[in-house]
Length: 150
Length: 427
Image 1 (cartoon, each protein chain N blue to C red):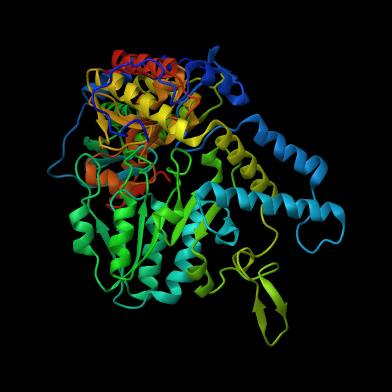
Image 2: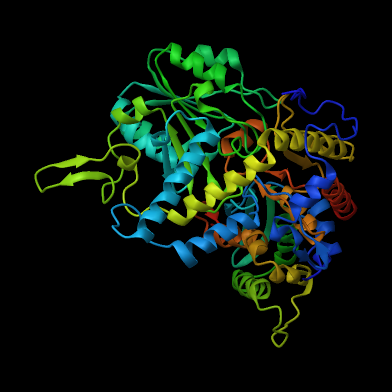
């Protein structure tokens, strides 16, 4: 049995208590809602693009510590990144939280996102961790739809 | 009942009064349930998710094993001894259910896959035949999705209207509204006897009498009541009563529909197939008598036999004594949880079973559940298949500890220590 403290890293507790970029955006170029029926998490992710660059990204909503901190950390690493960099980051993040815990070979350091590595020990919480990212992907497409994790 | 079933008023520890179960008796009972001695992470498992499913005593496991190892044959019409024995076992399980629920006739007991299937059976037979455009079906705010969606589907098909009895902030039905909502268009009233989220024990007799006064039929969802209190469908006077086997310490995949014989007789069959017929020609099929009219195909024979063994077990301990004990334990748990800073109990009705839902300001129910699991305490977190109730309460989820007669004060203490850990991590 893994230790739950590996899931609730101090960084996660911190972002859960005081989430960064936790605000609605007045002039987004795209936004999307994400809904995770498992925990009842509902997040809205806003993004403002400046050409190909993410000029601003924020979120609102309510949810469990994992979904909320993941959204907060996501917004704090994406500002100033290109659309393509953001998409790559999602792929790497998704791999990190779904990879086999016994597999240490491909452990690329993902910086701030590392705080959520413990999620891979808890497959049921992967949806919480990736909710904001799925909403971001929809917001980048700018179709304003609600994405669901189930 | 000697002890008043009053809600969660100030708890005062009382010595064993000879009415419920003594601590020694509970320790003996725990040894009957193999899963209760499982350890997790080096600690004993504290299982407090009994509203989702209960653990099984060895006698139930043995009954399943014995059936498959020594008694397995298909029932009815077998002209050999093994089949006759299997048929007897199956029929005798039905009689046990009949006695357990206080039904007048064993043919009023229909075996289903579960409580959900039993509700769907009523909606699709009685409902389809009797509900017309403009009619109304009345449910309550605290229903489980399984007692909402089948009626919604029926209303959509028939152009009928679903109406909802409101609840108070404490989680009790607003009884004045029941009278106001009932009218000559009401065809069916479907209400739970005990809320799976709040633990509220509803005054179903009152609802049934009021519904009958306007000519409506009443279905009582007993999924959370039958395992935890004495049920008597005849005294209650309901037309239908449903419950599930796996919550009464029996196997999964077996459930009960009780229907009053005179109502069941008027209903069209549900599924077509073997066993539900008297004779079949390509021109005309004659349907079988109750209960087989509603049991097409080979039933869950081992499930019924296992459920019969579970009921025997429950009756041996005594469901009234179980209810007393669980009530005391619930009061102890409510008082202890309430004393923890930041914990708010959800569901504070005056009459309750052993369901303790709570929320914490600083931690989401799912995070509470995760930390508790680390401490070896199994509870449920989420909307508990009652999203409209969650919306009424203005919350997205609760953490829910649900008790059974094999739980102990020490386990309540473990729950509370684990909740303190949640505070350490999140608050």
